[in-house]
Length: 315
Image 1 (cartoon, rainbow, N blue to C red):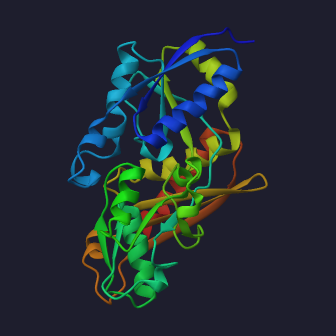
Image 2 (image 1 turned 45 degrees about the horizontal axis):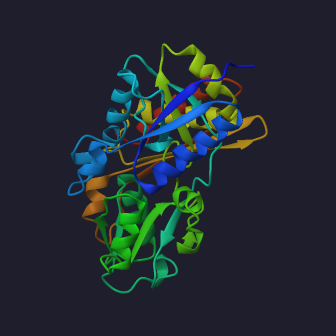
Image 3 (image 1 turned 90 degrees about the vertical axis):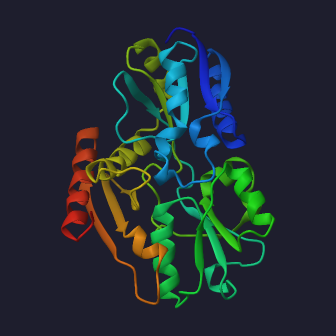
């Protein structure tokens, strides 16, 4: 039995982030720990007039939370794993990766049930370069070069409000966030993984702590999910090997097939996708399968797939 601890969780103050932190709090309380939440506003939440790739990347969502850990104001930071940089600063560690929610992307629109139903010249919103290149590729296959893909920033509620105000005909969001907040009814279409390959770590929660807190790591260990941990380790290894950040239009997703892990990745040219015409945008795909039972094997599989991407022309 681990000893009961008084744990403070640092979290962003968006509704989704508070749900995620509250979920972790409930699980820890059920194991006898006392848990408080420390709500914080990050730089990523404050800068909404520019795309993440132009202002420092997804690490803007975690730096203030890491400062709270380092200063002792908090013990654990709860992150959407897809927002966590591939390499953490010295002194920090991901102590736990929890079971993954639905990793797929969701099509949200009041007027269009799917991309095929978009009116001429429609505007679709997304905050992700990955979604930009994959959406552009899908739209060009539908011969819809007329559709514009525009940046969409803000937390989940802000993005839905912008859609409802008519700024976009449709937006693409992570299904996991919508489902966690009970907003399943907003989803008009779920992209299968074959249609829209997810981001590394999408749908999973990661718990970050200071590396010198072994008693805290022991308390969090029961919340970890081994299958999700290994799958996301492989996905994040692809991104790490490619120098991945939010300025990298990169997708990576792993599925289990018995003891084998099937890892697929895709890279696209964001500049070409942003100015796409009827000519298809460059899109490089790679995949591999392997027996994976520990983290080193997962990382090796990810590095192998990254090498295949580079061999195919990804940069």
